[in-house]
Image (cartoon, rainbow, N blue to C red):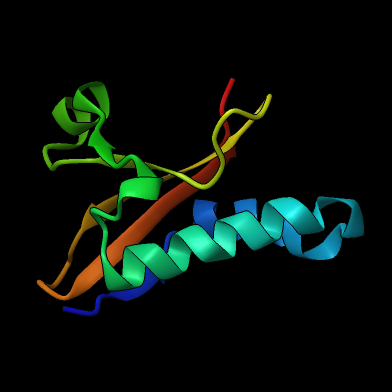
Length: 98
């Protein structure tokens, strides 16, 4: 099943600096690859997808984290949830790991 990705206002704002800054081209490529995997298979092994229980409890729906990068200082993560429809994934945020 292929999912349609929709982006929250925050996620769009997170993506803009990556698209504008040439020095972040490698990060942008990794984020795009992760977004492709989310569209085609949210459980793809390279995403290391897992639920973030603290966010899930607060929002009342299951919130997941997917890895855009791994083994990198400040590696980027994508936070998302299923919905609002069954074939849709909402991207909540795209942020570097602290």
